[in-house]
Image (cartoon, rainbow, N blue to C red; front, side):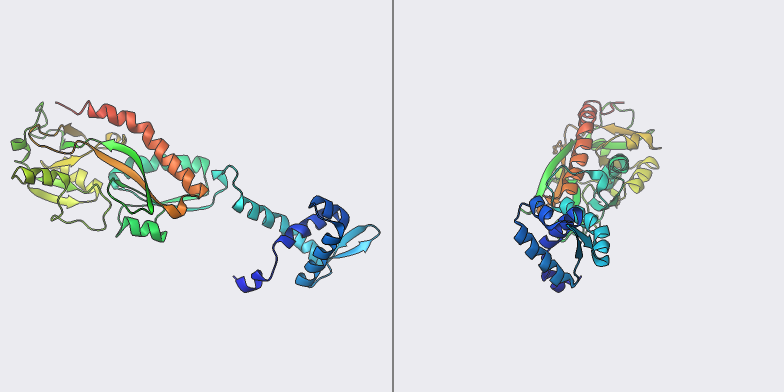
Length: 326
Protein backbone atom coordinates (compact mmCIF):
# COMPACT_ATOMS: atom_id res chain seq x y z
CA UNK A 1 0.00 0.00 0.00
CA UNK A 2 1.36 3.43 -0.98
CA UNK A 3 0.96 5.11 2.41
CA UNK A 4 3.13 8.05 1.39
CA UNK A 5 0.79 8.96 -1.44
CA UNK A 6 -2.26 8.39 0.75
CA UNK A 7 -0.85 10.72 3.41
CA UNK A 8 -1.01 13.57 0.90
CA UNK A 9 -4.72 13.00 0.31
CA UNK A 10 -7.26 14.52 2.69
CA UNK A 11 -9.78 11.70 3.02
CA UNK A 12 -12.36 14.19 4.30
CA UNK A 13 -12.51 15.49 0.76
CA UNK A 14 -14.11 12.21 -0.31
CA UNK A 15 -17.10 12.96 1.91
CA UNK A 16 -17.51 16.34 0.19
CA UNK A 17 -17.16 14.68 -3.22
CA UNK A 18 -19.97 12.26 -2.33
CA UNK A 19 -22.20 15.17 -1.34
CA UNK A 20 -21.43 16.95 -4.63
CA UNK A 21 -22.15 13.79 -6.62
CA UNK A 22 -25.50 13.32 -4.88
CA UNK A 23 -26.65 16.96 -4.94
CA UNK A 24 -25.12 18.09 -8.29
CA UNK A 25 -24.95 21.54 -6.68
CA UNK A 26 -22.26 23.36 -4.70
CA UNK A 27 -24.88 25.24 -2.69
CA UNK A 28 -26.93 22.14 -1.79
CA UNK A 29 -23.79 20.12 -0.98
CA UNK A 30 -22.64 22.94 1.33
CA UNK A 31 -26.00 22.94 3.11
CA UNK A 32 -25.83 19.16 3.45
CA UNK A 33 -22.44 19.35 5.19
CA UNK A 34 -23.28 22.49 7.21
CA UNK A 35 -20.59 24.66 5.65
CA UNK A 36 -20.79 27.85 3.57
CA UNK A 37 -21.06 27.92 -0.21
CA UNK A 38 -17.61 29.60 -0.60
CA UNK A 39 -16.06 26.92 1.63
CA UNK A 40 -17.57 24.18 -0.54
CA UNK A 41 -16.25 25.92 -3.66
CA UNK A 42 -12.76 25.82 -2.14
CA UNK A 43 -13.21 22.13 -1.33
CA UNK A 44 -14.17 21.44 -4.94
CA UNK A 45 -11.05 23.23 -6.16
CA UNK A 46 -8.90 21.13 -3.80
CA UNK A 47 -10.54 17.99 -5.15
CA UNK A 48 -9.77 19.08 -8.71
CA UNK A 49 -6.14 19.74 -7.78
CA UNK A 50 -5.60 16.46 -5.94
CA UNK A 51 -7.39 14.30 -8.50
CA UNK A 52 -6.08 16.26 -11.48
CA UNK A 53 -9.53 16.35 -13.09
CA UNK A 54 -12.25 19.06 -13.35
CA UNK A 55 -14.74 16.48 -11.94
CA UNK A 56 -17.77 18.62 -12.87
CA UNK A 57 -18.85 20.98 -15.63
CA UNK A 58 -21.78 23.33 -15.24
CA UNK A 59 -24.98 23.15 -17.28
CA UNK A 60 -27.38 25.81 -16.08
CA UNK A 61 -27.63 25.45 -12.29
CA UNK A 62 -26.54 21.81 -12.25
CA UNK A 63 -23.10 20.23 -12.03
CA UNK A 64 -22.49 17.49 -14.59
CA UNK A 65 -19.87 14.90 -13.54
CA UNK A 66 -16.95 14.13 -15.82
CA UNK A 67 -16.13 10.51 -16.76
CA UNK A 68 -13.59 10.43 -13.90
CA UNK A 69 -16.26 11.64 -11.44
CA UNK A 70 -18.73 9.06 -12.78
CA UNK A 71 -16.16 6.31 -12.19
CA UNK A 72 -15.66 7.54 -8.63
CA UNK A 73 -19.44 7.72 -8.17
CA UNK A 74 -19.64 3.97 -8.75
CA UNK A 75 -17.02 3.10 -6.12
CA UNK A 76 -17.20 5.85 -3.53
CA UNK A 77 -20.41 4.86 -1.64
CA UNK A 78 -19.19 1.34 -0.82
CA UNK A 79 -15.81 2.73 0.22
CA UNK A 80 -17.36 5.28 2.58
CA UNK A 81 -19.77 2.69 3.96
CA UNK A 82 -16.84 0.38 4.71
CA UNK A 83 -14.97 3.17 6.50
CA UNK A 84 -18.08 4.07 8.49
CA UNK A 85 -18.63 0.45 9.50
CA UNK A 86 -14.99 0.12 10.50
CA UNK A 87 -15.08 3.08 12.88
CA UNK A 88 -18.71 2.79 13.99
CA UNK A 89 -19.40 2.00 17.63
CA UNK A 90 -22.90 0.78 16.86
CA UNK A 91 -24.22 -2.72 17.46
CA UNK A 92 -22.02 -5.39 15.92
CA UNK A 93 -23.59 -7.75 13.40
CA UNK A 94 -21.67 -11.06 13.39
CA UNK A 95 -23.28 -12.06 10.09
CA UNK A 96 -21.17 -9.41 8.32
CA UNK A 97 -17.83 -10.62 9.67
CA UNK A 98 -15.45 -12.41 7.34
CA UNK A 99 -12.24 -13.82 8.81
CA UNK A 100 -10.57 -16.37 11.06
CA UNK A 101 -10.63 -16.82 14.85
CA UNK A 102 -7.95 -19.06 16.37
CA UNK A 103 -8.46 -20.85 19.68
CA UNK A 104 -6.16 -23.17 21.64
CA UNK A 105 -8.17 -25.60 23.74
CA UNK A 106 -7.46 -28.97 25.40
CA UNK A 107 -8.98 -31.86 23.52
CA UNK A 108 -11.14 -33.00 26.42
CA UNK A 109 -12.90 -29.62 26.28
CA UNK A 110 -12.83 -29.31 22.49
CA UNK A 111 -14.59 -32.60 21.84
CA UNK A 112 -17.81 -31.26 23.36
CA UNK A 113 -17.44 -27.51 22.94
CA UNK A 114 -16.24 -27.02 19.39
CA UNK A 115 -19.01 -28.88 17.57
CA UNK A 116 -21.62 -26.81 19.45
CA UNK A 117 -19.67 -23.59 18.89
CA UNK A 118 -19.30 -24.29 15.18
CA UNK A 119 -23.06 -24.79 14.91
CA UNK A 120 -23.63 -21.34 16.44
CA UNK A 121 -21.07 -19.73 14.15
CA UNK A 122 -22.38 -21.28 10.93
CA UNK A 123 -25.85 -20.01 11.76
CA UNK A 124 -25.01 -16.54 13.07
CA UNK A 125 -21.57 -15.74 11.59
CA UNK A 126 -21.25 -17.76 8.37
CA UNK A 127 -18.15 -15.83 7.29
CA UNK A 128 -16.22 -16.81 10.41
CA UNK A 129 -13.66 -19.62 10.14
CA UNK A 130 -12.80 -21.28 13.46
CA UNK A 131 -9.25 -22.66 13.75
CA UNK A 132 -8.65 -24.99 16.72
CA UNK A 133 -5.39 -26.35 18.11
CA UNK A 134 -4.45 -28.16 21.31
CA UNK A 135 -0.68 -27.61 21.19
CA UNK A 136 1.37 -24.48 21.69
CA UNK A 137 4.88 -23.54 22.75
CA UNK A 138 3.55 -20.65 24.84
CA UNK A 139 -0.09 -19.72 25.40
CA UNK A 140 0.73 -16.19 26.56
CA UNK A 141 3.32 -15.65 23.85
CA UNK A 142 1.02 -16.69 21.03
CA UNK A 143 -1.85 -14.61 22.42
CA UNK A 144 0.45 -11.56 22.55
CA UNK A 145 1.79 -12.16 19.04
CA UNK A 146 -1.68 -12.60 17.54
CA UNK A 147 -1.08 -16.25 16.62
CA UNK A 148 -3.95 -17.08 18.97
CA UNK A 149 -7.12 -15.07 19.60
CA UNK A 150 -8.22 -17.13 22.62
CA UNK A 151 -7.08 -20.01 24.78
CA UNK A 152 -9.13 -22.21 27.09
CA UNK A 153 -6.92 -23.63 29.80
CA UNK A 154 -6.73 -24.70 33.42
CA UNK A 155 -6.62 -21.62 35.64
CA UNK A 156 -3.11 -20.49 36.53
CA UNK A 157 -1.14 -17.29 36.90
CA UNK A 158 -0.98 -15.11 33.78
CA UNK A 159 0.56 -11.75 32.93
CA UNK A 160 -1.32 -8.48 33.37
CA UNK A 161 -1.74 -8.24 29.58
CA UNK A 162 -4.00 -11.31 29.60
CA UNK A 163 -7.61 -11.24 30.75
CA UNK A 164 -9.00 -14.38 32.35
CA UNK A 165 -12.70 -15.28 32.49
CA UNK A 166 -13.85 -18.20 34.65
CA UNK A 167 -15.72 -20.75 32.56
CA UNK A 168 -16.47 -23.85 34.57
CA UNK A 169 -15.25 -25.93 37.49
CA UNK A 170 -14.60 -29.63 37.10
CA UNK A 171 -14.40 -32.34 39.70
CA UNK A 172 -11.82 -34.99 38.81
CA UNK A 173 -12.56 -38.67 39.30
CA UNK A 174 -10.99 -42.05 38.62
CA UNK A 175 -11.98 -43.39 35.20
CA UNK A 176 -11.96 -47.05 34.17
CA UNK A 177 -13.59 -49.27 31.59
CA UNK A 178 -16.80 -51.15 32.18
CA UNK A 179 -15.76 -54.63 33.25
CA UNK A 180 -12.67 -53.40 35.06
CA UNK A 181 -11.96 -55.43 38.25
CA UNK A 182 -12.79 -52.32 40.32
CA UNK A 183 -15.86 -51.27 38.33
CA UNK A 184 -18.40 -52.91 40.63
CA UNK A 185 -16.90 -51.58 43.85
CA UNK A 186 -19.07 -48.97 45.51
CA UNK A 187 -15.90 -47.11 46.46
CA UNK A 188 -12.25 -47.55 45.58
CA UNK A 189 -9.38 -47.28 48.02
CA UNK A 190 -5.94 -45.82 47.46
CA UNK A 191 -4.38 -49.25 47.85
CA UNK A 192 -6.69 -50.68 45.19
CA UNK A 193 -6.10 -48.06 42.50
CA UNK A 194 -2.32 -48.10 42.98
CA UNK A 195 -2.32 -51.76 42.00
CA UNK A 196 -3.11 -50.73 38.43
CA UNK A 197 -1.15 -48.71 35.87
CA UNK A 198 -2.35 -45.24 34.93
CA UNK A 199 -2.80 -43.24 31.78
CA UNK A 200 -1.67 -39.67 32.49
CA UNK A 201 -3.73 -37.39 30.29
CA UNK A 202 -2.60 -33.77 30.12
CA UNK A 203 -5.35 -31.26 30.86
CA UNK A 204 -3.17 -28.24 30.08
CA UNK A 205 -2.23 -27.07 26.58
CA UNK A 206 1.29 -28.29 25.88
CA UNK A 207 3.42 -28.78 22.78
CA UNK A 208 5.13 -31.82 24.26
CA UNK A 209 4.42 -34.15 27.17
CA UNK A 210 6.80 -35.92 29.50
CA UNK A 211 6.49 -38.65 32.13
CA UNK A 212 8.76 -36.50 34.31
CA UNK A 213 6.02 -33.87 34.66
CA UNK A 214 3.88 -34.50 37.72
CA UNK A 215 0.15 -33.85 37.69
CA UNK A 216 -1.77 -32.72 40.78
CA UNK A 217 -2.55 -36.37 41.41
CA UNK A 218 1.17 -37.23 41.52
CA UNK A 219 1.90 -34.39 43.92
CA UNK A 220 -0.87 -35.54 46.26
CA UNK A 221 0.58 -39.06 46.22
CA UNK A 222 4.09 -37.80 46.85
CA UNK A 223 2.89 -35.96 49.95
CA UNK A 224 1.80 -39.38 51.26
CA UNK A 225 5.08 -41.01 50.27
CA UNK A 226 3.35 -42.93 47.45
CA UNK A 227 3.73 -43.11 43.70
CA UNK A 228 1.60 -44.46 40.89
CA UNK A 229 2.69 -46.59 37.93
CA UNK A 230 2.40 -44.76 34.61
CA UNK A 231 1.79 -46.81 31.48
CA UNK A 232 1.05 -43.94 29.06
CA UNK A 233 1.52 -40.17 29.10
CA UNK A 234 -0.34 -38.27 26.38
CA UNK A 235 -2.27 -35.12 25.48
CA UNK A 236 -4.29 -37.04 22.89
CA UNK A 237 -7.71 -37.74 24.40
CA UNK A 238 -8.77 -40.41 21.92
CA UNK A 239 -5.50 -42.28 22.46
CA UNK A 240 -6.01 -42.11 26.22
CA UNK A 241 -9.62 -43.29 25.98
CA UNK A 242 -8.80 -46.20 23.67
CA UNK A 243 -6.08 -47.28 26.09
CA UNK A 244 -8.35 -47.10 29.14
CA UNK A 245 -11.16 -48.96 27.38
CA UNK A 246 -8.83 -51.63 26.01
CA UNK A 247 -6.89 -52.38 29.20
CA UNK A 248 -7.03 -52.30 32.99
CA UNK A 249 -5.34 -48.89 33.07
CA UNK A 250 -6.98 -46.16 35.15
CA UNK A 251 -7.10 -42.46 34.36
CA UNK A 252 -7.72 -39.31 36.37
CA UNK A 253 -10.10 -37.15 34.35
CA UNK A 254 -13.08 -34.84 34.57
CA UNK A 255 -16.31 -35.10 32.62
CA UNK A 256 -16.95 -32.21 30.27
CA UNK A 257 -20.14 -31.99 28.24
CA UNK A 258 -21.94 -35.01 26.84
CA UNK A 259 -19.91 -35.89 23.76
CA UNK A 260 -18.02 -38.69 25.46
CA UNK A 261 -21.29 -40.28 26.56
CA UNK A 262 -22.43 -40.30 22.92
CA UNK A 263 -19.26 -42.03 21.75
CA UNK A 264 -18.31 -45.70 21.83
CA UNK A 265 -16.57 -45.38 25.19
CA UNK A 266 -18.38 -46.89 28.15
CA UNK A 267 -16.68 -45.44 31.19
CA UNK A 268 -17.21 -46.00 34.91
CA UNK A 269 -16.19 -43.09 37.11
CA UNK A 270 -15.34 -43.38 40.81
CA UNK A 271 -14.81 -40.73 43.43
CA UNK A 272 -11.28 -40.07 44.63
CA UNK A 273 -10.28 -42.42 47.48
CA UNK A 274 -11.12 -40.82 50.81
CA UNK A 275 -7.56 -41.30 52.02
CA UNK A 276 -6.07 -39.16 49.24
CA UNK A 277 -6.01 -35.43 49.92
CA UNK A 278 -6.51 -33.54 46.68
CA UNK A 279 -7.70 -30.36 45.10
CA UNK A 280 -11.36 -31.15 44.60
CA UNK A 281 -11.99 -28.84 41.67
CA UNK A 282 -10.26 -27.85 38.44
CA UNK A 283 -11.29 -24.36 37.24
CA UNK A 284 -11.14 -23.67 33.49
CA UNK A 285 -10.72 -20.15 32.12
CA UNK A 286 -10.93 -18.28 28.83
CA UNK A 287 -7.74 -16.31 28.12
CA UNK A 288 -7.63 -13.28 25.83
CA UNK A 289 -4.94 -10.68 25.24
CA UNK A 290 -5.85 -7.05 25.99
CA UNK A 291 -5.05 -6.07 22.40
CA UNK A 292 -8.38 -7.61 21.30
CA UNK A 293 -10.43 -6.29 24.22
CA UNK A 294 -12.16 -3.59 22.14
CA UNK A 295 -12.72 -5.81 19.09
CA UNK A 296 -16.41 -6.41 18.41
CA UNK A 297 -15.92 -9.84 16.86
CA UNK A 298 -13.67 -10.98 19.72
CA UNK A 299 -16.17 -9.79 22.31
CA UNK A 300 -18.96 -11.60 20.48
CA UNK A 301 -16.99 -14.85 20.21
CA UNK A 302 -16.00 -14.67 23.89
CA UNK A 303 -19.66 -14.23 24.87
CA UNK A 304 -20.67 -17.25 22.79
CA UNK A 305 -18.05 -19.42 24.49
CA UNK A 306 -18.97 -18.24 27.98
CA UNK A 307 -22.73 -18.58 27.40
CA UNK A 308 -22.38 -22.07 25.94
CA UNK A 309 -20.21 -23.36 28.76
CA UNK A 310 -22.38 -21.73 31.42
CA UNK A 311 -25.37 -23.54 29.98
CA UNK A 312 -23.58 -26.80 30.76
CA UNK A 313 -22.56 -25.83 34.29
CA UNK A 314 -25.75 -27.26 35.78
CA UNK A 315 -24.98 -30.61 34.19
CA UNK A 316 -21.46 -30.49 35.58
CA UNK A 317 -22.78 -29.64 39.04
CA UNK A 318 -25.23 -32.50 38.90
CA UNK A 319 -22.51 -34.84 37.73
CA UNK A 320 -20.45 -34.11 40.84
CA UNK A 321 -23.29 -35.60 42.87
CA UNK A 322 -23.80 -38.65 40.70
CA UNK A 323 -20.35 -40.09 39.96
CA UNK A 324 -20.94 -43.80 39.53
CA UNK A 325 -20.86 -45.91 42.69
CA UNK A 326 -21.42 -49.18 40.96
